[in-house]
Length: 158
Image (cartoon, rainbow, N blue to C red; front, side, top):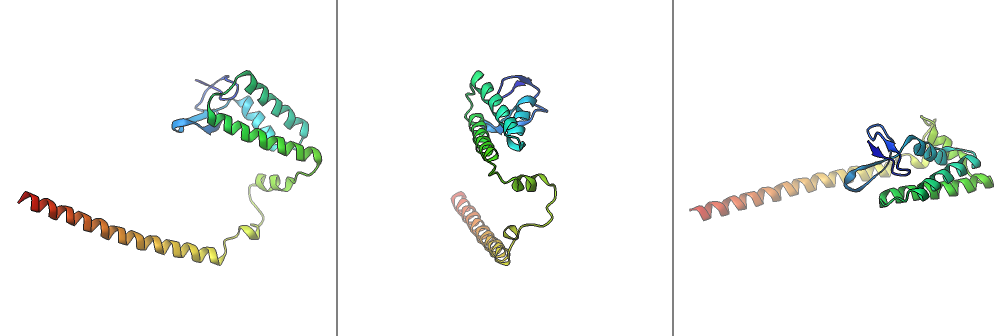
């Protein structure tokens, strides 16, 4: 058992959602309530729901200050994004088509600007060829160093 990184509630970290990775690649887990609030601020289309979830997370952080910088950074980034998103939803300027595209499991067609071009393919082939050449050169250098060390060791022995 461990504690939620936001509200310090007891959680089973084997099944808990991961907020971020902390020092020494240790996962920073959160409870289901905090995960639900984060999901709401990221995906809800209603300004009041986002504001309420935002306030709940802020209240939890105020009641239990977090000392881990990775958790602070992650939550701050999420809340900043949520605040901007909520204001644009309230103003009516938020473009939900981006959310819809991310939410759909399969895209009807890939946007043209995201398609791989012939230039990209040619560059990838050139990069791959250059990497193979570098590997051959480095293998030769390593072999020469090995032979040099071996010769030096034989000379010193006899």
